[in-house]
Image 1 (tube, one colour):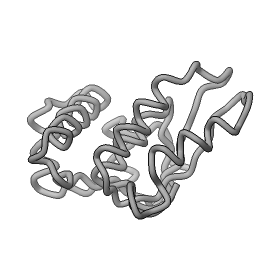
Image 2 (cartoon, rainbow, N blue to C red):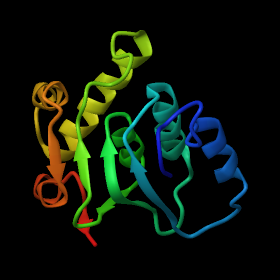
Image 3 (spheres, rainbow, N blue to C red):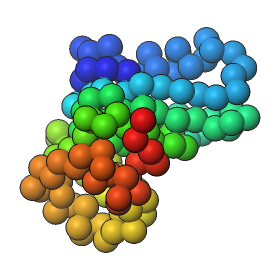
Length: 150
């Protein structure tokens, strides 16, 4: 999964769900992610789909190879494990259309999920978004935002 999330880019929720339906049975769901975000609605759709899957035998994991930013963070959080390359980073930014109902909902969801995973306060994660905070793979590992650097 690479590039911007949502139309007109290739990473759209409907396309992702169709692709997943064509996989058949699998033991592990493994994905590669390099995205600077984009559509809150498509990111939310992919996250919800991943969370609604009956779990594969060995779970699911995503490898962040470059950037995972804004709305794309929600997609990464849909997987059981988040792995990162040493030079990869996660960047918190204010979500596009954050003032719309869907944007506000996704902002709140993302902040709660990250706060839960990192044992932080929601308000702190919201400040990260306001400040465009960029976390290296090492910082993500220290905060438990990722599970391993590979």
